[in-house]
Image (cartoon, rainbow, N blue to C red):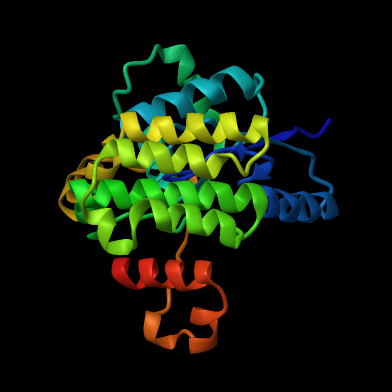
Length: 273
């Protein structure tokens, strides 16, 4: 009898399995299901409930424990990590890693066939240094709020967008203000989301506020140490998918002014770029 391959999806920084009805890996899952079925391969897919911005070691512990509890006894395992979680995958598979877990919770590693990272900052990102500042932390929170609401209701309506702009007074105000201001903005915007989705998004944002350990760890200087100490497992096939973002200058002017939301997000994108 052919084995059932276990495929684990690990969401990246600010990622989730499902949030307010949105499935983070939906398109990847559908594509893999079709291709594996065409080859007569049976597979089961699982999402790892990785905390959105916690430290790499803590997220790797969550990854290891989840796979240990759900991967069966002998089925081959495949790990797919997006963004920062590609680093978690590398860390948990490193033969010399010390995650503070019992050996039986890591026994599944001998069954891992492949480890794929998608848009992972293997050499760090200079943007992380900015996001560790007070202004950067606040900007991240607003971006997370807008992204979560966009996933729940589609592109924010003028009413939702106006609540955000009225609350912060424009992009420049992200670099000042106080945390109570962002609490008021959050409460105001989440009224547009259904009750179940509202609770999920509020919980997601709360996790970002209380633990941002991974942001410091993906600075280029920190990743130099990570790469010097994290080994690959010779039994595993590693793959890496890279992507790039176009400079703001290449974006058509019409796209910038199509809606207030588009203008705002392009301004944010240009600032970060």
